[in-house]
Amino acid sequence: MEIFKKLTVVLLLFLVFSLPFFSARNFGPAFDEITHLPSGYSYLKTGEINLNPQHPPLIKMIAALPLFFLDLKFDFDDPNLTGHEMNEWQFGRNFLSSNGIDNLIFWGRLPIMLLSVLLGWYIFKWGREMFGYKAGFIGLFIYAFMPNIIAHSQFITMDLGVAAFSFIALYYLWKLTKDPSRKNIILSGLTLGLALGSKFSAVLLLPTSLFLIIVYIHKKHQRSSWQFKSLLSFKILLPIWILSFLVIWGLYLFPKDPLFYWQGVNTVYADRNPDHFFYLNGNFNHDGWWYYFLWAFIIKTPVPFLIALGLSFFYRKNIKLNSLKSYFLFLPVFLFLAVTSWKGHNIGVRYILPVYPFLILFVSGWISGIIWNNKDERSKQFEHSEAIDMEKSPVNSNGFKNGRSFRVWILSFLFLILAGWYSYSTLSIYPDYLAYFNELVGGSKNGYKYLDDSNIEWGHDLKRLAEYQDKNPESKVLLWANSSVYQYYGVKNVVSLNDKNQWLNPEGEYVVSIHVVARTKLLEQVYGDNSFNWAERYKPIGKIGQSFFIYKFP
Image (cartoon, rainbow, N blue to C red):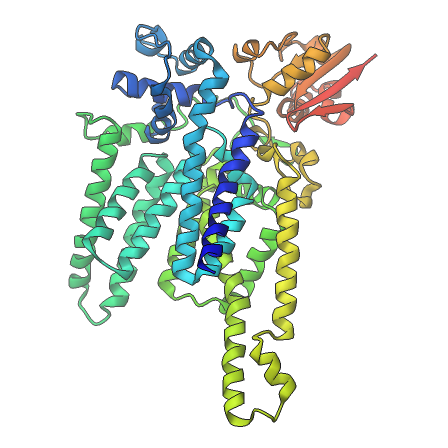
């Protein structure tokens, strides 16, 4: 039985790795990968962190590690790297194109996939320790088939990394409340530092850890004075925070400026275009919407998981949670959602990726509790009933002996249906996990009507575009991000987005980025002419994956 359990976990972890691995082979670099991977390599090569300061260096450096074993061209004198006006994007394009984009991207993505496996292991580990083995297995199953997790496990960005290290950091903080040993204090500090070194949004872990330790100390020493509790909280948190600072200092290659991290925080969104309009449900807004990320979560998360999540909140009494466990599960979810909704740019559900592991952990604990705890209670009732009068009710006693009431059978059957639906909805969208939308909005084919940007098309599908154009060389192309990367893949006939004549008087065949199609409604509003609005005016004759619409005009 133990061998079967271990084999099941290994197979699920293999699935966690293999789905993004095979999916990613279809795609060229996503827009942000053009700077993230080359920037990380430049840190390791030069010992200086200059490019892409709006993100901490850890994930970029991890992604760039395999590149050290390759014989690559690196121009130390590139003015985009060393000049007064550094250009991370142009440096990235130069570096990738001169060394073979696909080869570099392949090796750079592997560490991110392994980070996803690491996160999957900790979801299983925490679920098993908090709720039992079955909860760990259920959590790992849910995680393995979560489309948003798969989508961002295959790209070199900060989002999967911060989700992984944030979850692991809070796991070790939870372990600390179980066993306040020096080992757990060290592990808490190290993993907190790794989370802070992944993405600046991880600073939310500082008030989170403060609150959780205060609650822990208060519960453990209820009769002690507030001075004692404050001192004890300080004695626990101080070494954790000092260790985390030392980790960050090392990741930044030991800068002399003590405010180096704060300066990085101040560069977040430094490259934002002030004229950019955010997009939601066919509408455009400079400032975005407070409910954007909540809505994105609802329509980009599989419906079976939403059903299980809703039921688990409604029937949460079926899961044994004390107040401290509840805070560990829900405080990070609340803070990431609230602060991201307040400050985050409305460009992708990936900004709230850290909430998924905690919700998965909660749902897995509830499912295992409502089924197997029910069985245990029935078994206890059977033993008690048998001791009193074994022959009094043979039917019920047999039912109790098997540990299954009719209600438990129904629940088990329901969860099997949800599990089948859940896995099918994920596998059916392969390999286009980035563009996954659930049945509430009619599936991925309607996604562009509700969200755009990194929710659906991130400039990553140039390889399949080039394959299509090889067979249809006369097709014109309208891209979201016009950069030299498309030339590497041999994409031709790229039309400027500013060419009004192409929008007003289209002729021949066009391949148009779905991101661009969604924004033709904005062109209609800007120019006051509905001829620009291809999204509603014309019907495409085909699609390339989930990234491009194909139009044909006489």
